[in-house]
Image (tube, rainbow, N blue to C red):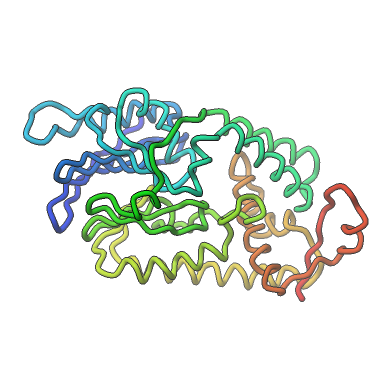
Length: 340
C-alpha cells in the first residue's frame, strides 16, 4: 500500500511559515520533519530515517513548498540549517541524503553529536553494554541473540557524517529559534521554540509516552532525567500555543499532556513495586507489563521495564536479592530484584 499523508502548514505569531513533512520512517512508523521559512533562514528540523521511501518523501515535502518570492519548488540546496532534535535514527538517518545535496549547516546537542559523527563506534560500544544488560535482565540465550541481531540490523542503516555545530556553541539560540536541553528519552534531546510554537521531537507525544531506556546503557537517559526534563519544559514553555511532535498529532495543551505522562509513570512505578514483592527479573517484569512483544518492540519493552527498575533501585526502593551470588561471579549474571 502506498504511503499517503498530507503536508500540513502552520504559522507562528510572528509570521514564520512552518510545513510539517510526513515520512514513513520504518514500516508503520510515521515521522515528521518540519520546514521553517523565516526571514533569511530556511530551516529543516529532523530528517526522517533515510530508510525505504523516507528520503523520497522528504524530497516531495520540500518540493511541495515554493521558494519565498518564487514559483520554483524548494530543494535541499535551499536549506540554510538542519537542526536535529535528538540522536535516534528515525530523526537523523536522512542526513546522509541531505548532506550529500546541501551545504546547510547541521546542528545537534553535544551529547548526541557522537551518535552522528562516530556512529559505528557508538554502535559497537552500545552492543557490548546491551548484551550485558540483557544477561542481567534474565533474558535467555536464544532470545538474547534474537534481540541483539535486531539491534545490529537496525543500526546498519546509517554511517557517520560530520556536523557543523553543537547548540552550546551558539548559546542555545539561532536567530529567533531557542533551544532547551531535555535529556531522558535521548541523552542530547532538545526542544526548539520559535515564537509561540514548540518543536518537541519525541520528548512529549500525544497518546503514547516516549520510550525510556536505562541510564546504564547510555548516560543522560533514564526515567529520572526524563521526569526532571518534563518539569523544566513545563516552566520554560509558558506561552506556547501549539506543540508540534516528531510523531503523532500536535498538542494544544502541553501542561495537561505533561501531567498525564507523569501520572502514567507514577502508576507504572507502583505496578513495578507490587511485582517485586517476590524476587524476580527485569525480563519477567517485561512480560508482566507488555506481554509477549515481538520484533524491535521486544527490545523497546525490556528497555522500558528496565528504566523503571533502575529508577527505583537508584532510590533504594528495590534491592538485589542475589547480590552475593552476583558479587562472586566474574561474568554477568541474572539479577533478581526485590522490594526493599
